[in-house]
Length: 106
Image (cartoon, rainbow, N blue to C red; front, top):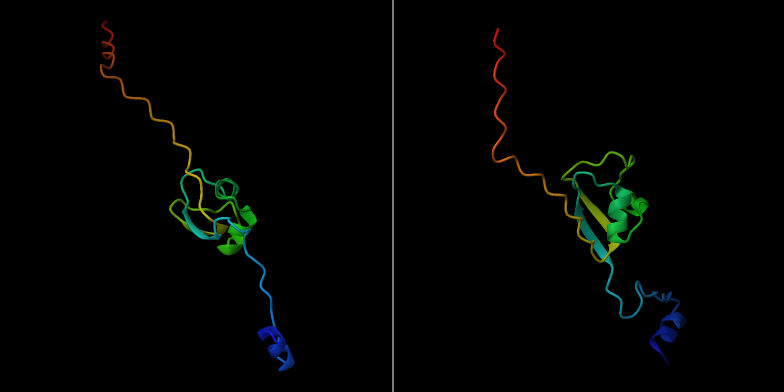
């Protein structure tokens, strides 16, 4: 007699747990993400492979337009997020600025 049969005979409930992820897949867990300038929940969700609605729910965000730079967000069910695209480099300042125009003479 199996353990499940003995437990059922004793009147105890037997629960079967479904696998959380397919066999061989990386385990899903909660990733922390720090909001950067220009981030949106949609973009973060795409980068992390999770819907923006799940991120909002996990963080108690009622208004997804109110993210703050530096805010830490829980990203549920993610095994990691892709890196942000590099910001374009600022143009270097001119090495030799043009001389100022001479004042007009009367």
